[in-house]
Image 1 (spheres, one colour):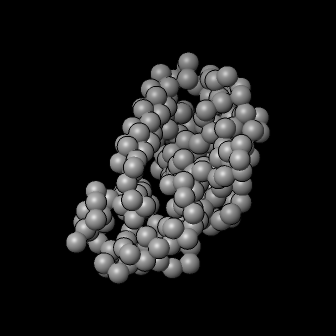
Image 2: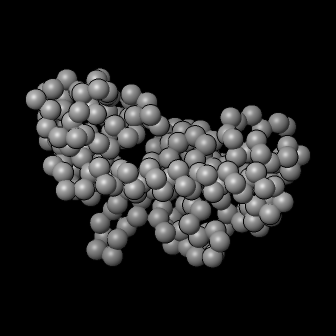
Length: 217
């Protein structure tokens, strides 16, 4: 059966090989794809939906270093040294469809299909740049500007309806849900966003970008 997902990484794998090695699994919103510290058995690829990466620190606090969408790779950190997953992955939408390639398959493809290895390197470089730019744009700023910065960065990836809760945003920024709620209320009063259960709708992308750099008056 042909695998009909518009994911560049999969298109670099010979079709006959792909049909034999790709495992497809489906999740509902809130379900865990894998748990922090579980053994890294392979590479996950988002085929449909959205996935949040969540790390629990030594003090029990939860951080969300990333939200990944169709075409993104997940769980690659321990693939080379066989260490455990440094964080958990949770589905954010229903359905979320994930593809899985066993570790030995990924390592073999990395050697036998140069384009496959180069694409993984490109994706990792793009992700590192995104994380660094997102972090530097938020550092030391008031929470309302940090919230605006996160939403502005996610807009091209998730669209104008960002399927995140106030708590999800709090985990990304590293603050409390109540603090994020107050910041969203301030943005809502300015006509930038509206907030509903499980999602934040962006009404004015230009104003949102202005808020991400400082108080917009």
